[in-house]
View: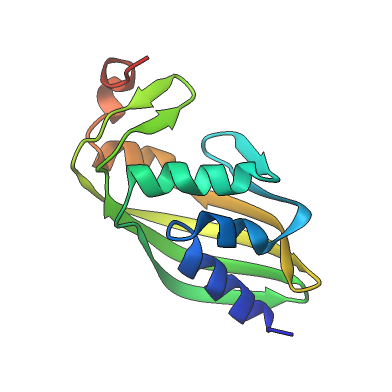
Length: 145
């Protein structure tokens, strides 16, 4: 069986590129919680969410800086990087592509069971993201309903 580090590194490698493979790395009841957005994806919605981010940020890549292990819990410090080139659905509406780059600090917490992810809590700096995309000061005017 793969190590927890190998499982998590593989999850990152396929996240936006292979949404169905991404989903297959979760347990049946596993979830992905987008903490700043307040949305928890489970089941096939995990792949759908990966599709959404892939369309909005087709060049998304992660720079992992530190990984911490405590039994079946893995905590990762990283930076989310890319360019906003597609629509991004949000709770208040859809943010059209801004064409701007972003470099967002993030902490991810994973729980691994039987070689698969049972919980993925993603804590990225949402306000930094919105500021880098140039919409923080007037978010509602930037959204399309």
